[in-house]
Length: 222
Image (cartoon, rainbow, N blue to C red; front, side, top):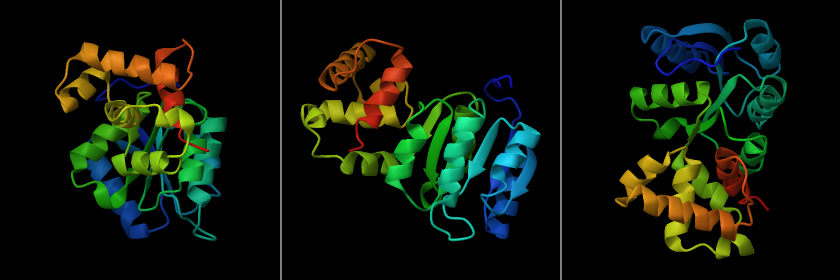
């Protein structure tokens, strides 16, 4: 599958057990020029539907039938394994830190995790969807915070300064160096220096820069 360019109409699969939310989300996406190629109300059929339709991105709830615990997130992890070129945006009101970390374990490229209650602007959601579909990352700050909070005792993280922790959190949200600089009102060069310090303190040897950014976030798990 060819990765779509930014602002290109996307082919989307929606996995959401609430019919009202599923139809409402589909309507918003179609209204903005995207194509919803399939919708499912359970996680069990998601993989087959994605295999059949080859979408650019799948939007997946966490708690779905039959047990309404973590079926959706487990299905999202399976999608990452079976269809690595399909973006996966988890869209839920629940944060499951264990499986969120596992979802990112293969790399954060093309992965998102947003909280329904915290998406106040449709444009922000569409932007995140486009970012994930084109190989970027979109993580809600609260998801990042809980991932970080779950492993505060780690010695490697304890080495980071408050500013470096702040930069790491913004990295995990998918922000570029330029965007981080703008957010913190510092120069891009200063951000690059902080990121270099983070990689050093977390014992991440030189490799692909984006891959190291992902590993820095994954150091948060115990």
